[in-house]
Length: 306
Image 1 (cartoon, helix red, strand yellow):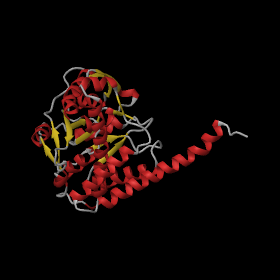
Image 2 (cartoon, rainbow, N blue to C red):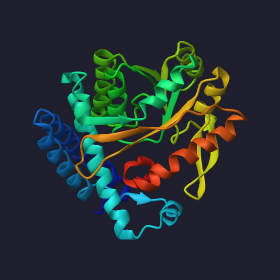
Image 3 (tube, helix red, strand yellow):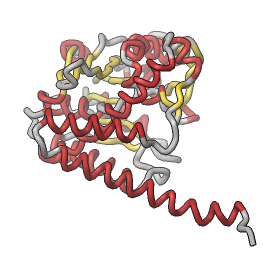
Image 4 (cartoon, one colour):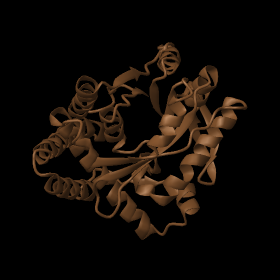
């Protein structure tokens, strides 16, 4: 008697989930071990692990066709970016595994920050500073480095959700806890029905604090269309709205890795204030970030449609 396709899916699917879970557990364990090695060796291990993860990924990484045309990229170049994206992910997760044991001074080996004079100029106005960027794998290392230099920020973001594997949720919680307990960072989690996120962020700015928001994975209620890489893309309106209400400046940042891989470089742009409506400011934010993404597409996580 032949088994039905539905019955086969019920039998096979749990085995596939277990296999993926074991791969993820092994991947994170290897990175935790590598995090205890000298930094140059640890990064070499992380990059190799990233390349292996790319090679044996369960489903391919696809690039938005409009974005690929805007970047003028050949398929082979896109393939190289995708492989490097996996190396960047593993390197960022290696760094996060080091946070619980790191001193403030140790962040200088991981990342250098350019444009601190822009942040100082913004804070001198007394209305705080709202830093924004696209998602990248080492954004939390930038956040930790800011705190280590005496600029502990408050990060607005999504909490680790049920859509993630338990091992990944645990890793993300440990990363946030290390930044909070060791370096004085703070997280404001966006959740369904949580109407106080904007108020909490505004209160940080009123105290002349620093708020970090990533703009390229918006909640549908705060999404606005912008022109980005020659096509329409959804960005969040949140940073522009909060900045206008408080009179706080917006500053872009982006993280690059040079050929030597580390220390990576974070660039903080010049401050600007929302003069018109928030939708126009959201477009200006997108325009500020576009040259960075064109320069280093592999670093932008949203480029890849999993």
